[in-house]
Image (spheres, rainbow over the protein chains, first blue to last red):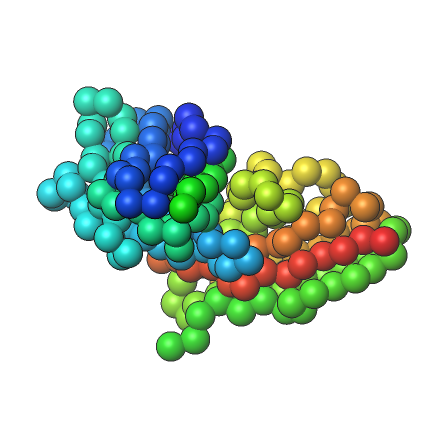
Length: 114
Length: 112
């Protein structure tokens, strides 16, 4: 069965600092990978996704993520965090097999210090 | 185009009553998910529909919870004999198979 682990429940960074949120997945084939963001009081929004091809994917709001098959990871990065990036971040794994179901991690809460 | 819609946006009910929550997915999306999100918590998977396949009900917390999807489109989540611990935001999402999920705004359920 597929699964996602986000090892960090809560991360705090200073505004302007770099950010890396970790995501590890378990899946028997080539996965589809997603990062979503949920700002306070808002719905979930897709940041970026990986299906195939270039393992470094760019998303909205200046985020990027890198697929590393050897490490079963899909970490999210941003070079300079803004206060508005404070939110809950969810990693998800899926595919077009296994009935196409996607599975979410438990999320990482990002706090940004001024 | 229209996104995923959910109704009602808010529902307040008394303990022991039944409630129905509705989800209208994006047209053409064959996959539909229901999640529950308690305050400050992550997404709790409830049920997954994909096309005409039998739904994946592995996340339903008890037999008080059920869901159906009619005609491969609209879905209804029913909670019978509601309990206070059922209070949460219930989120619906739809997608094409394997693809990104599009989320509705949620239904905030409060059980008094």
